[in-house]
Amino acid sequence: SFAMSGAAYAVPVLLGMPVAILGLLSSVSPTAALLFKRVFDVCRAMTHMVLTTEGSFKKELKKLPDPDLLTKLDRASFQKVNLILIRHGESEWNGVFNKSSGAKRIMMIPIWFVQALCKEFIVMLTGGSVFLDSPLNEDGVNQAQALLKFLEGDGSSNKHVQIMTGKAGKSVVVTSNLRRCIETATIGLWGRFRDSSDKIILLSDLQESSRNVDTYSLSQPMGVPPLLTLPLHVNSPAEKLEALLETAGNAGQKKIFESGLLRLQRFSAWCFDSPETKGGDVTIIVSGHSLFFRTFFQAYMTRSVEHEAKKKKIVNGGAVACTFERGIVDGATVFRIDPATIEVIYGGFGK
Image (cartoon, rainbow, N blue to C red; front, side, top):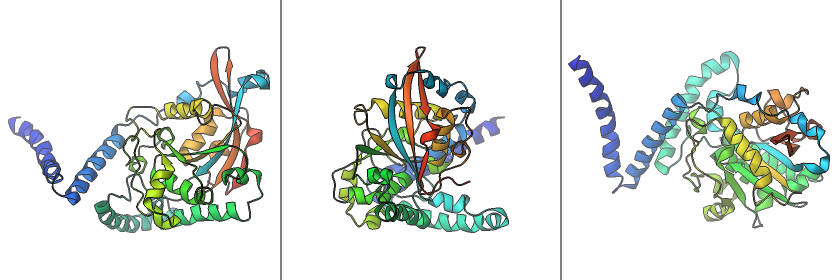
């Protein structure tokens, strides 16, 4: 038993020694500092993956107030905002684990994984990562650029597009604090930001609800994650892009034992109570994630209505509009998405 207990103590000591050495080296070497931070991030992301309870809220959705309760109120007695939901482009993680299907996927995943692992060792020396807070891959960048081309071309006369490009109405742009969403919002809406003082607001409550390490945030509270290639994609200096991002709403990495539903509810309240939206008559343009958006529709859309938004994901780079409502019924706060207002702007719903 003594030998077993000795081995139990030896394991954390042996594992901890390289981390401790890197910690000491980080005070004199920038490269060692990056390696030390990456070891810390990987450990934290793996801990979250193993221990998190954030996805265990499916039963809680059924306990939310029935959205149809709002139909009993006079329209003048509840609040409304318009939402435009943009799903991020394909990420490096998607390109490894969610690409293709069937036998081809089974055969190619090991090859894609090794390629991504080699790329990980290269980008980690500059503070980036392929797996953690996974950024857009080449296809994802192309999808965001295709959205921009649509907004400035074929779709330019659409009323929602006019709002997205900042040419009509009052609107605010918000994004998850994960890199792929920040990149998609910046590239896809670059026509709006190129020559204006508009901001993109980072909200950590929009962070994806998943235990996978690609949903781990590399940004510190009130900080900006490493956006290594973004300046190249929009042909703009990094300093301008950092000034574009408003970080007061970014609390950094999500909590391990916090339900994803709580973040969804906080974002829902933000839509009506934030300084940017409190005046009403505003459209909120949201760059976010597939599972977050699908859960959003499941939680707040009329329960008696079957709609593809409850079952399918918005396609990568796609944009969908809807009206979001809030009111008080018998002392309870009730949110509702009016299914009649759901409108595909670009891309639509996939699988």
